[in-house]
Image (tube, rainbow, N blue to C red; front, side, top):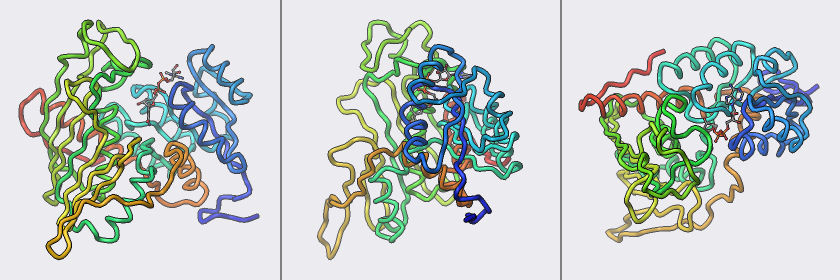
Length: 367
Ligand SMILES: NC(=O)c1ccc[n+]([C@@H]2O[C@H](COP(=O)([O-])OP(=O)(O)OC[C@H]3O[C@@H](n4cnc5c(N)ncnc54)[C@H](O)[C@@H]3O)[C@@H](O)[C@H]2O)c1
């Protein structure tokens, strides 16, 4: 028997259950687990919609199914679960799974708000199990290239970041993304979470101390306005359609965050702009013809540089799942720990609150 660093029998397959079999389970979690069949066996699927559950059980060849996630948590064979349900469900499912001794890969955002994320971080700490947040962009090629570039000191100290996830007509037409009760918010918490995480990851996850911001809901509710990402019921649209936040960090850095489902702009952005003492950079973690441009100066000559050997990562979703499995097998800290999910939720809470109060709001990360 070959044991990993934490005594995990490396010949043993990790047995997994996936809770929620909707869009992201089918595009990220299940392809990720099935990409390493020698290491993982998906034993259970769970969804409260019986027809979707049956369809996915056949599609993925998984024999055990349930509409009640406690069934798979009660199975002693299960080592780990994916939580791929709407945000409202993340906290209870994750806490229950950790208490049942399972490792958890929980979709982003970690939860609806900082209080819920604190409970999840506490449960992870008490259980000693892995809690990883589904923030896959860290594993994309441009992200990996820039992380090395920054670690090698080429940007100097990064003191300002601009994180933009701006869609022109991009309200998700599936799921419950327009329902504040089930999601906790709109583009800020849904897509802003990705670009802010990516920005903070490249900046070394500085500790936020306060944020100010504003949200609007001027377009998303209006039935006269078109949408490019499917249809949805305008009368039940209860989230913001655009948010802007300015976040202040302990060591003096600042980040401007802009996020929209709908905005009257020509060009959509999913981009991070970083300004450092030695160079600056624009980085697009999604699909882009021009994913990285670096702004530098040498001997009074000023350059815009485009790297040519950006790692070719076919699917950052698959890579994130493989990383979760590697952490379980080998031990050590998750590369996307629950604490980062908590930082993001605490920032969003402050931006939403600031939008109501008109004041800068303090951020408390203690749990
Ligand atoms: N990482 C990414 O890029 C990314 C992309 C899209 C969505 N997401 C996240 O994934 C999560 C799910 O989004 P989605 O697009 O897959 O939504 P979805 O609506 O397609 O799927 C969610 C599934 O969860 C099921 N479900 C809801 N409550 C349940 C319960 N109590 N028990 C069992 N099943 C339940 C629903 O029936 C549905 O099948 C959200 O948190 C969202 O933010 C992440």
